Length: 463
Image 1 (cartoon, rainbow, N blue to C red):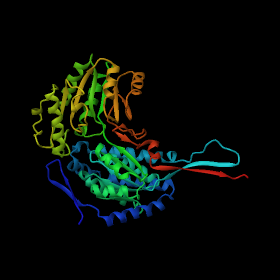
Image 2: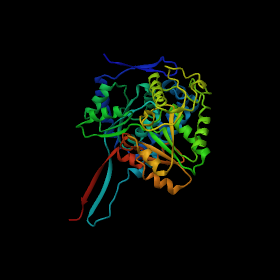
Image 3: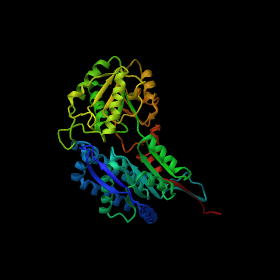
């Protein structure tokens, strides 16, 4: 008897979809098919792989009209923003396809007479992608296309909250006529997911999710000598220097804090502002935040949808309540957002001041529409506070001084440093983190290094 996974929509709390989990026989068949398909796929020229992958991207984009409302029902993002995820999906996929010839090219060291020496990038085998619900197309494509381009087969296990995204990927691959077994979407529970990792039949696991789930991945992989890429979230800081363009900084940091209801691993969750511009900054920031429209994500007027679940919203409400109890001040009146009913997944955005690092809201990942803002007296104070975290995914510096941004960026413990932008992944750059934000790399040329292994050829042809 297989278990059933239900997708509960945050829009209205009803079951939106449900699927049976794969059983042991189905999993065994999927792993065998993946290995068989990969053995042939790796021999195909890179140009052929690119043609298949581009066709899959085209097929996914052709489903746009259905995907956008479906995404709103599954995880709550307003339909007015749904197309943005597909634009990002295409940007990342096309970039990784385009750079594959260079990233996977044979490396030849300085010639030595009588020898032919080179290093090839060989595919690993089967890659298991465990994708999250918050950016379900973007996070999954970070690995899927590059893994296929590198000559691997792929098994996708998508989050239960976005079951239908996995099916969309499978349908796109089917329409692109990928070889049978090369890409497979499996509905899995935690037990069978761990069993696949421990089976020795996958050679790389790329996971995006919580720190605790990341630890479970490591435990499952113990002793298997497989690659493990972990992107585990963040508590991303921003520092607004006195010379920043105030209008630009406020506009982008409000968006970076509240887009997708703050449900992003690289959302801005804490802001440090030079004390000289702090009063003007928080006044503008709060005023712009009040312009959000909280409501049903299927409504085109909505700019802030529900969180993924009532429990997620309750966690953020708890952080806000704890901060207020400890002396923080809320700049946003929740009553101005009548859709934010206590106990529901709908939560008004909140801006907190008079906060400190003894408060959960400044230390634990919120993953919701709340941000704490603190004044600072110097660059040194800002950097010390930015680094006072167990996370290190991305950080942003807002200034008109490029040299200062580079200098300060060198002092921040983070995977990505932004200047005058935030909450964005450039597919030409490595997406990575430090500390509890994880390990490994996706995107860029370096992403291919984590989906291949080096194979050296040392050939003596003159004796």
